[in-house]
Length: 117
Image (tube, rainbow, N blue to C red; front, side, top):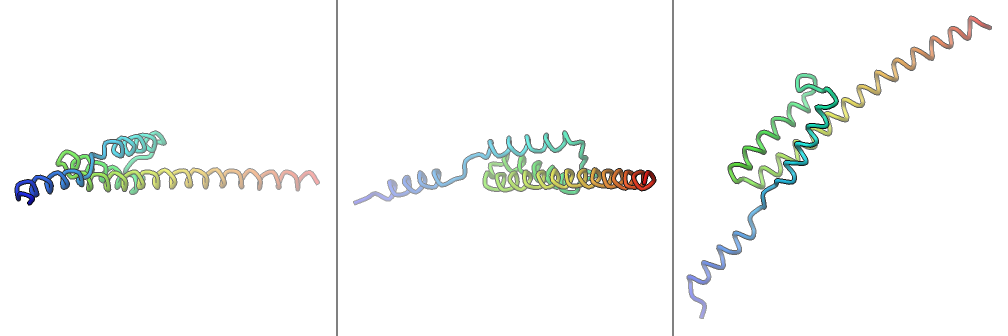
C-alpha cells in the first residue's frame, strides 16, 4: 500500500514539473525587437504601439522577478508584437511619404513633357 507521505511527495514533484520555465529567451527576443524599433528613430511619444510595448516589457520584467513566469511570457510576447506593429506602422508611414514625393516628381515630369510638345 502507498504511504500518504509518498503520495504527497509525488504530488509536489509533479507540481514542480508543471510550473512554467523562466521566459528568459522571450524577454531577450522582445528586448532585441524593441532595440531594432528604436533604431528607426521612433519615439514612444510618436507611436502609441511602441509606448504600449515598452510598458508591457517593463511589466514582463517585473513579473519575471516576482516568479510569475507565465504572466511574464505573455506580456513579453505581447510587447514584442506591439513593437513589431509600431515598426510596421512606421515603415508604412515612410512608404506613404516616399509615394507622395514620387507622385509629385511624376506630375512635374508630365508638366515638363507637356511643355516640350
